[in-house]
Each structure stands twice: as structure tokens, then as C-alpha cells.
Length: 465
Image (tube, rainbow, N blue to C red; front, side, top):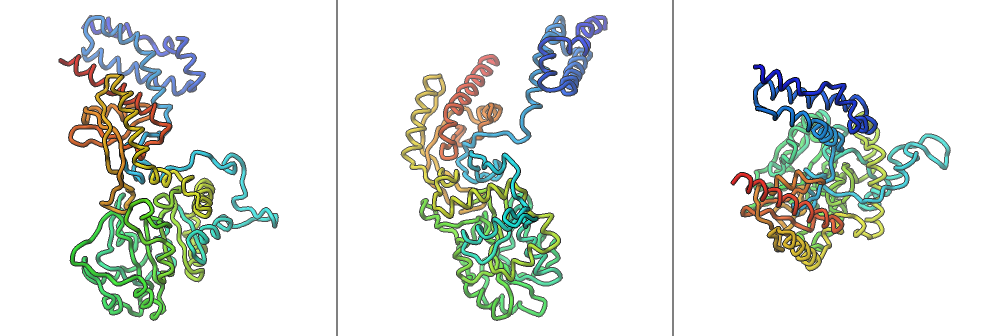
């Protein structure tokens, strides 16, 4: 007990720590309250360890001397952005956990100033938030009208609330999807006040199934994109044009949740085609909704396009104000739409990454592998397969190239602790880093992170031997 008390006396008081020059500088940078909190936390943890007898001999005194460094590290960690930039080396281009489509680096000038968000500059009076952008969305999609909300789930919810509240919506059983984040189509319909009317079987649904389900309470026919799964084998479903003809003959709208936001033929990038928004409208869909941060390559948003008679009630619905996008999403979406309109898809990071030739990725991988081997890291360049992700073209991949480094889970964990964190995948106990999703300017940082992480693991293994 006397030894414990002696050890506790070695721990400095908070006010003495705050008098240290290094922590006075920290107060100027972080503010007094955060530094005080970090000091109290570090001292309390050290006191607990000393009182429990975990620090024998003069270890308490040594630990007390390290308190300023411990406090500064805690402050550095607490001062990091809530959402940190990471190096995406997974090879999944639309990685939902990593923000889906990466955005352009050049911030539009209107986001660095005041902007005419709800102001008609020409008329000198209040304007409508969506008015400047709605026409551009419609033009890109080949639609008559457009509405934008904060994500595609909100888009579908608004459509159902505006047109199907208290009524039935017909959906094929094979399209009752559940996607990431527990988004379940039946639950969304119920929350919007619509009644689900299932038709057909999971793998086969016919036009007659839809026709027999139409009744006095029917509000719409809904087609939902399969998103992250495929039904193959003994399958059948009516063509969209057939469903449109049936819906229109019964005075109903045909609504399509397209999900991916495809505006272009994906065969251009060696992938199987997704039905584009324009093709769905041309086939007779009255309303199409889709995500803005998938194949559109923009910020998170839900876009709804189609006939003005069906979209007009959406913007007037009481829910719209709760679901409308903020100024940042609107401005960034305008920037992305301009690239689609001009045909300059290479200015959208997603499409720039999709278009990278495998040969260019292989050259980068071999250059990085040579640099890493010179630093003592047994890296090798290898071919890989990248994926679009985000629920688009499931089970389909594109050729890519990257690095393979032995180290398994320990190396993957160490890479995530780098600054910035590096997120990779593990195959056969090797860490695989796919360069299709790594920006070329990130290569030096990636090499440095790999070298540091690998040497750290080797040192730990040597110390434990």
C-alpha cells in the first residue's frame, strides 16, 4: 500500500500539466476546455492503473512523464474530422460504406459564397429552390419534368404518399426487395400509407397477373429494380412496354424505381447493360426514380423524372419540404449534370475510374511494387477484378490491377490505422489493394502507409518472438 501511495504522488495535478509549454500551446490550438478534458481523462486512467497495482516500481513515474504526449495524442484524435477521407483500395467503385460515388475536387464558387438558392435574380423576388435545376435534370434524362429529394428512398416514399395513400400498389413478388440499411419495399409502402398488392411468383410473373389484380382501389403499378441480386433460371416477367400499355388502359401510372441512376449504356465500359432512365421513359414509364450517388456519379440524392401531371403533386406535397435537398447537394448535382449534358464524363471521378485502361493500372502497380520491395515489403503486382458496387450490376466485375502483400488481417488492420486510413480486401491471407479505386495522386501515400504498416507488424512479431 505505501508503494501505491508513493506512486500516486508521482502523478502531477491538472493545473501543473496545463502550465507545461507544450500544453499551453495546445490550449491556444484546441481551446482550454478540450485540453482540460484530455488532461483529466489521461490522469484518471493513470491513477486507476496505479491504484490497481498495474504499474510496479518506477513505472508510474515514467508514465507520468509521458502524460503530455498521451494528452496530445488524445487531442489529435478528437480533432480529426467526423468523416475522414480514406484511400479506397477495395476495387468497389460505388462503395456504400465509403460514400458511394466520389465527388469532383473543385468546389463550385457558389458554395464559397451566398447563392441564389430561393431567389429569382431576374425578377428580384423569392424563387423556387428546385426551379433552376429541375429543367436540367429533365433534359439529361429525356423527361418532361423532374423533382429532386435527399435520397432515392425518400423519392419512392414521396411518390407513394402523393399518389397511393390509402390505396393499393401492384408489385411483383420477385421485386419485393430489401437492400442495405434495412430498406424494405413493403415497409416503405406501409409507411407511405399505401397497401401492397403482391402478384405472381418469386421467379415468374405474367402480364395477366397484373391485369387480374387491378381494381377500384388500385393507385399504380410499381416496378422495382432488383438492385443487389439476380433471379435466374426458370423466370418470366412482362416487358415494361406491356405493363405501360396495361396501366394506361386502366388509367393508372406506371412507376419504376430504377435505383442505379444509369443514364448511359454500360457496355461502353465492358459491363452488362442496365436499363437507362431514358429507355424506361421511352418504354412508357410515367414516373422513374433513382439515386444520385450511384451511376449518375453525383451527391446523395433521389431524382424523380417523368410526366408533369404525375410530378407536379410531389413538389406540392407537405412532405416535400422535409425531404428536399440542401444547397450543397443541389450545386454539386448541377455540376455533375453539366458533365452528362456536355458528354465530358471523364470529369466525373466515377467514370474516369471506370475508363482507366488495365495497362495503365498495371504500370502503376508494378512501379509501386518495386518501390515497396526496395523498402523491404514483399509486394507484388497482380491482376484483380473490380466491381461497380452500390447494388448495380451484381456479380459482374471489370478487369483491374493492383498489389498483393502478405500479412492478412493484421496488415489490413494496420492499414486502417494509417493517416489517411487505407481500406483494402483480403484474399488467401494476402492484402489486395485494387488500384482502380485509388486516385493516382494517392499512390505515394499508399506506398508510405504500406511500408509503415508492414514494418510495424514485423517489429511486433520480432518483439513477441
